[in-house]
Length: 219
Image 1 (tube, rainbow, N blue to C red):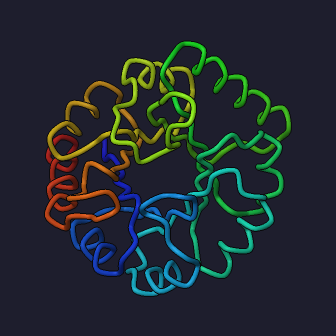
Image 2 (cartoon, rainbow, N blue to C red):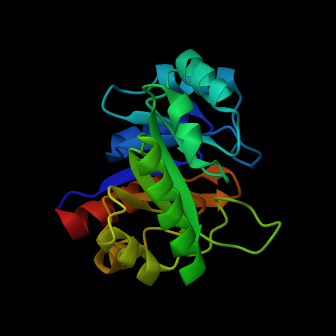
């Protein structure tokens, strides 16, 4: 099974080029508050320089759907990743834009809440195009890019429970991504803080090593 690779938190064209050259399938452009945040103008410049086989994904936290759709059109995003506490009915306002819904998972209660969110979206007739599992931190902690590991056991169960396609995030790097893929069997993996030399500063070398590690373990 070929596992897709997304490199999140790309804030410079040269980091996007490194991801593309390494063989990544997608990059994440963060529009939420973060050391990795980009402006719409910066994001558009990065997208213009991407080869057509690398999908640009915008990462948003509790943004109004209308603004997300507008930014997607202006920047040229292929998909939007909702990384906050967006309700299921937000999907209906996204039109034809592909949506990845992120869930922060650290307990059985988190899994149950995600399942209820998914059921409600199905009832409303508009489901996410993919799901992402990230680490759950305490109140006031960052909603992504924390470097903490997600709970792989719970993520693996979510795959079996129908959260497909599922992208695994949370503290992944070249050293542990093969183990994570073996444990969870995700459709894709998402690397961010584990590919940096400092918060918000991507390492082209670690990006390359990350993609190579995924390709070695999945063919």
